[in-house]
Length: 268
Image 1 (cartoon, rainbow, N blue to C red):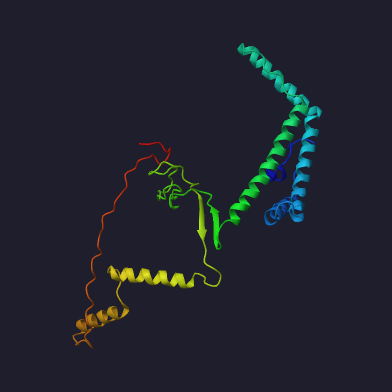
Image 2 (tube, one colour):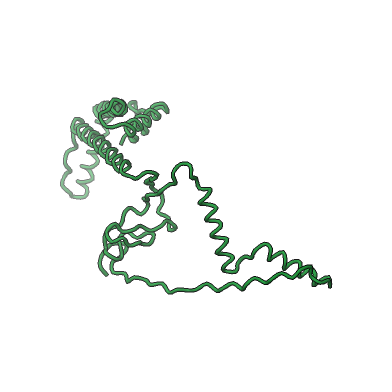
């Protein structure tokens, strides 16, 4: 709402056109930040809201002046004359008369005030959601619902759905927004160094267990043995052969029966 008012040019091409400066845009962001960081009805909160309200009043005044201007009235009359002519050619009844400038302005005024109220309600609800999150937890929204994003877990039955599903396949309930997630971060001081090293060590152990890699000592002993065999000299020292890697066990995966459509939620 507020960025539509502040970042848009009003009635571009007419004498009532208005384009905000970069300073006004920065002040609008600062006003929203004041409302975000302070409780409602506090002095800092009201300072931010008063600035946004002043820009709303400026936009409403500019709108009222434009709607009562001769060029706006002439443009409205010309459009209504064209509608009458088109209805006559098609044999349709004449259209309803266009609203007066005061009626049009009243509609804009009511819509702007309603958007301001909705913005305040949305901001307060969002603040409550963020304040209810545990420590070191954040709620993020990804701009694009890419296929590689993880699927959502059903809040009703706890079933883990696939990426892109809108409804749970098990109970048919609607899933949370597909591109909104709650992530947990590490407490300050821990960092990702220890966790990263543990992850690297686990990957190396798994690769060695599956036979994709071997220990450095084993590889060096194999190189020495091959070089000695090519030159005809006896190997410097026999190295014990490592045990052959065991083949990984394979397990069957149980796939649950899909009872509900994952796009519309209807029972199959």
